Amino acid sequence: MIDLHYWPTPNGWKASIALEEMELPYRVVPVNIGRGEQFAPEFLAISPNNRMPAIVDHDPPGGGPPLAVFESGAILVYLAEKSGRFLPADPRGRSEVLQWVMWQVGGLGPMLGQHGHFKLYAPEKIPYAIERYRTEADRLYGVLDRRLEGREHLCGEYSIADMMCWPWVITYKSQGIDLDAFANVRRWYDALKERPALRRGYDVGREVKKATFDGGPDAESREHLFGGGQKR
Image 1 (cartoon, rainbow, N blue to C red):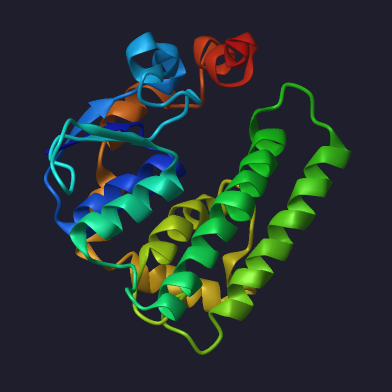
Image 2: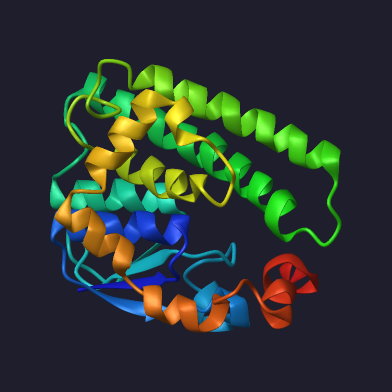
């Protein structure tokens, strides 16, 4: 059994989608990031960067004590290796998938995250910051669109690279991005959302999140997510 320490956000969805796609048994351990639960000592013991998701595998390959993994990219690589699915075994195929995994964790996620913050949540609207990150968001969508030209998936067969990128593209509406301007991304995005396992992974915890964030983060959530709580 795998414990998934989780909250339904783009990074959390990566892990829940992967677990559903790989058909690995898991249980959800909610980490309410709007209430500061990511700073609890028991969570920091498995995720020292006070970010979710994190997993604890109680039946790791090779046996031994439970194994904790934090950082979404590392989690998906671990789960792919454990299940033997969605990460090619041959060096060329594996390298290709890992390059796009790293592209997502180093670029697509952080840049869309910053754009979303300054556009939607920052108490002071800073035009330079909004334009800076919007320009980079558009550039990255362009990279993704060119990659998907003539391809059904990012790297041959459906892989963890697709699972990493799709949850961040979900945010296109709130970020004000015209997905139809990126025809290949639109085609890929629409095709993947028809996958039953992906839909199940995306739906994990939606009602829990709605109870806290319905109508946008409240004052306590803003403090934990954007304020002094981040300095802990």
